[in-house]
Amino acid sequence: MESKKKLPVLFLTLLFILSLVGCGDGKLSSSDSADVILKNINNTYYEVILDYSGTTPKNIGIQYGNVIKKTVPDYEQLVDSYLKEMVDKFFDGNMNFFFNRVKDIKQNLAQNYIDEIDGLASVLSSTNDNILGDGKLSVDELFLLNLLPDVGRATQCSAVAVFGNRSDNQQTKVGRILDWEQGSNDQLVKIQAVVTFKNGNKSICTIGYLGFMGVITGFNDDRVFAAILDSGDKSTYDSKEKRSYSFDLREALETKTNIYDISDYMRASDKKYAYSHLIFLASSTTAIVLENDLSKNRIIRTNTSLLNSGIQWGVQNAIACVNSFVLNGNTDNHTGSNSNSKRWNALRTMLLSQYYLNITQLKNIITYKTGLMPGKTEDGDLYNERTQQIIIFEPYKYNLQVFFRPLNGLPSEPIFTTVNVAF
Image 1 (tube, rainbow, N blue to C red):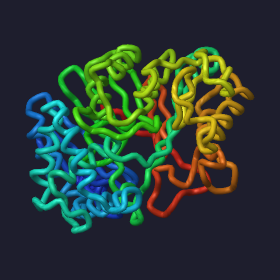
Image 2: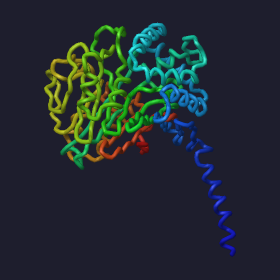
Image 3: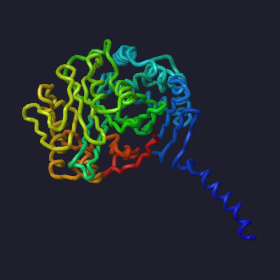
Image 4: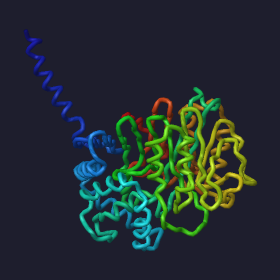
């Protein structure tokens, strides 16, 4: 009889302990609405699930905005101050310069994406004035956040994949580094997010930031991985009648099932972009790079493609990219850049010295640095002072591991978190 009496007490104690999980100490907290779930995972990143199956894009945006506001009360201040810093640092504080670009490109966004951001803005925007640095977000400023890759460039990224006989199990392994400015107060670090978009039978997952609805890095439930990388062609910027390549990439992931269809979609002549760029694409069996050089050629690069004079690769069953075009005939923004050439050579040298790479070996490559601490890309550091995220992904089993830049500065060695894929 004594043991039976103790059971209810034990059960209530267990319920009390479970109720504490997700509260206190910021270990894991959650907020949700009917179609949106948002969880704070160990104060490292936010897990977001957006379920479109029974609602509209506008309503998703509204619900998403509500849970962001509840979970990150200072979201407006964080994003506004970040945008202010970026405009001041790289473009001499010329706000109108940016907002004119946003206006041009916004006109060519798909209506469902506009509706999403408008929904977000209906909750997260508390002003009609486009004044960066006032601690508030206008609708235009929220669109500026979402179109940042299309209207302003200040990034240095890299990516590599091994497949076939260079992978220990013949399956593709991907490593991708995102190097963005994090803000003087770690504003971007505070809103890192993994977002799953569920829409009927189709789902995609993106690794980025709260409230950013395009694709910086992501993959779909057809096991196609995609990431954007900056690469300039020195042509004059013109946003008139241009599209957003980060949102076009989202649409491609949502509607296409293989890397070649996505590449064809992104390099089609009707897809006019203001900036040249790279799209890194991988499947379970191979990987390619789309060199979207708008002033020369918009063409796929494979691991056996002919490259510009003086640029060497020669690594079987592996492909990589930094922030440069290397295909024969495309703009050579590689040879004269230490940041590009030294990182490229580091990747090439490490890959040529190894075969049958496993995940640990790939991590060792993608986190390469020349000193004890992450330094400058000009020195050849892949893991560098501007690194925000390092993503390891195995498409065939949705194995996603991410190093998220912490608030207390970069460690000497990045620590990866295994991220649940909510497909």
